[in-house]
Length: 108
Image (cartoon, rainbow, N blue to C red; front, side, top):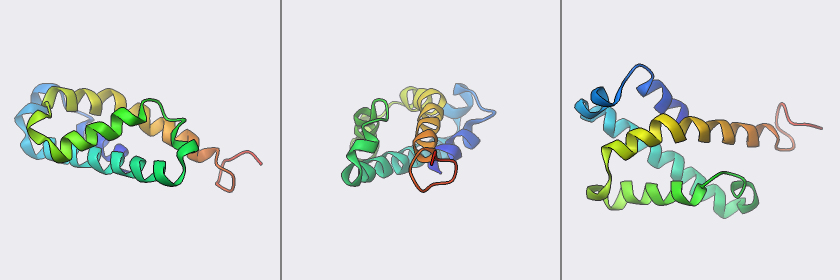
């Protein structure tokens, strides 16, 4: 999952290290784009499921900034999103998936 990859990429990093490594920035940004686009596609097919995810519209909008308005993207904002929102979002998605009918761990 893209969000889990972000957590691995930044696990032992701080903001200064993130700002110094353009490859790390690019990798985190790309994974954020992938995760947000997956949510965007999921919203088209399962809007009621995606509606349960906190602030999903903002996440998708941020993907559009990263993909289309790159000069507006701020490394500090990306770092904050990667540090705080991405792990919380991953947990939200995992909980939703766990409770879907027909999936392992869902209530019968």
